[in-house]
Image 1 (cartoon, rainbow over the protein chains, first blue to last red):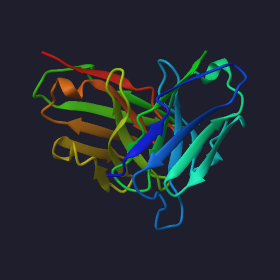
Image 2: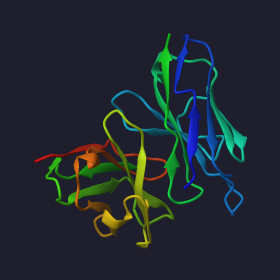
Image 3: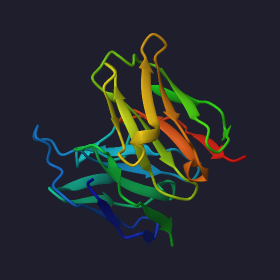
Image 4: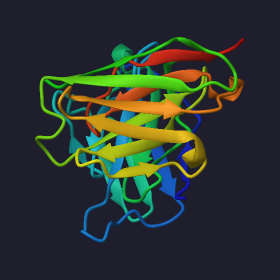
Length: 112
Length: 113
């Protein structure tokens, strides 16, 4: 199984300031079809997860452009350019390159 | 917009079988080449993928649960289902159905006598 490791566990951020979350996979997420199936999910308190970013850097429909994804191979990053109150929650990276699908342990974004 | 809705008992006794159904609306489960999956989240913990099914019926299961899991699809009802046998308290979780881009609201299943 591919192990997904997220850091930090928790990220206290001042409103309007940037936040960054790292995700590292135990092996390359490049699929044989050339795509890298690394996604980022947001889970607000009491809500189901919601897709933010797919294939490393593609924002899903309706996702604000303050969210951006980057990376390659085994190292990936989610950045929030200016944190807003509605961004509070837990963020997960997820790989779908290989079954079984696996998730990072989550990073909690909270306001200082 | 695609919507997914989980349904099924919220309480299951230990050793029995957990059964959930996901009803898809706003799109056909067989009209496009997507996998449809089940994911669970124990209270206060992270996400665990249970398994996925292709509209044609091909399935992939998490090896840690494979011996107890069955996922099936009913294209005529636009639904797919999860069965998890021999449940224990460790199977207590919110169960989500999802396509890769859309998730259901989730349903809490508690295993208790």
